[in-house]
Length: 239
Image 1 (cartoon, one colour):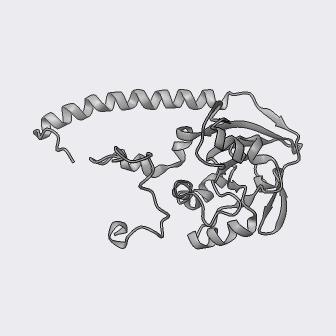
Image 2 (image 1 turned 135 degrees about the vertical axis):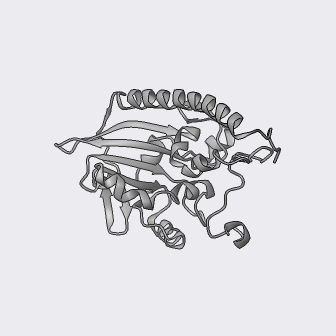
Image 3 (image 1 turned 180 degrees about the vertical axis):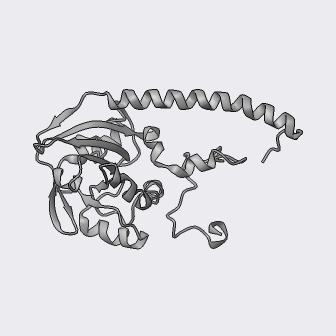
């Protein structure tokens, strides 16, 4: 870690206030973006997507659990995978504590993966998670929301992801999609984000951005190459 300039408390306060002015500008811009995000038009979904959970078959409307707003995290766990994506698992580690707070604001949070539920359940149990997590194996949901790709697409490096054509190194991708349900039960797609667009779900980065070493991802093969499943970190690092 490169040590920055060491200054007096008065000098530090001057520099901190200058940075605070910039932070306030970013906060205001984020507020404006949030307003524009909420003002996006909606798309009505008429395709009968079906999922499988611990109690059997569920429709997309069922995933709302009686609420009017639904956030779906597209969790990278494909059929036959031994375990879920470590980066997605890091995101999912943030979910359980948020559930009661989201529920109080009429929001349900659920994860969806293309792996059969029989493969989701043991990994979920291993990780100790409680949030709703269902399988889209029997539907086109993952493909329609551009988070699953064929082997040929991966091989050719030509698939539609993050609202554009390009390559992706896996048959499964991550992201977040938001849905709304009206009083008549109709379901609408309101928002989706992929790649770094889904980074707000990764609260650990907000904490790492506060500390002197930051994310410390320079020189890694990809930004989150350091991430492990939470049961795979060495005890000394966890401590």
